[in-house]
Amino acid sequence: MNQTIIFSDGSARGNPGQGGWGAIISVNGKVTELGGREAHTTNNRMELAAAINALSSLGSQVTKLGEVILNIDSAYVVNGITKWVYGWQKNNWKTSEKEPVVNKDLWEELVKVSGDKKIKWNQISGHIGVPGNERCDKIATSFADNIPVKLFNGKIFDYEYNLSDTKGSGVKKKSKSQNKLPAYSYLSLVHGVLKIDKTWAECEKRVKGVKGDVKFKKAVSAEDEKKIIKEWGIKK
Image (tube, rainbow, N blue to C red):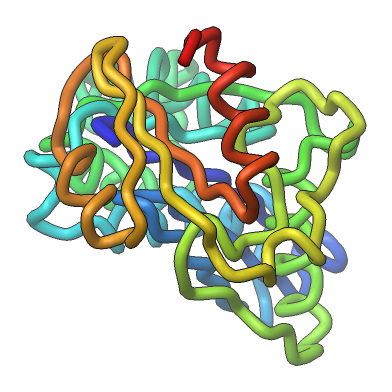
């Protein structure tokens, strides 16, 4: 619960061409999908726009959220924000070849929205079955093609994509049937201590804002509850 998980991706139909961006933000037990488009842009600008909009959406609450893990398949964005940008700023937004930095406006905005956050920039491989990346790509390409796409905004338990997978394990989606089942209980494991609550409000109150070793999960039956406890290595 002390981590915010973000996936982001950008797309352009032509370079330049119609473009779109998509992002997934998971924080405090909730998931929000975002997306947008531009009629004439580039892939790199859309990659930057996705990260900027995702980080901007966190607002002033970020100081309470702890580390932000931003998963993105763009080496351009990751290298730019973790390496190149320091030299660019020092050289008045000029490259080592004394040329103006391309997309300076977006780089300045990314620096601004990143400045008050503890961010782990995690470069992942694109299009290998990472659920969050695949979903962001779908959002981005849909916006680029100006095709309506329904964006999710709700509890993480009801979200069908497995955001814990950043390697492309093959488990692309969580079971829709299980997602829609009513909760039997909510389990939380805080610093090795297990607690079982009947409502998400009770569980959320226990885990929200806690730093360190924290896990939580919805159980849909007594058997499911026992299975989760066993998976967590708890003898009960």
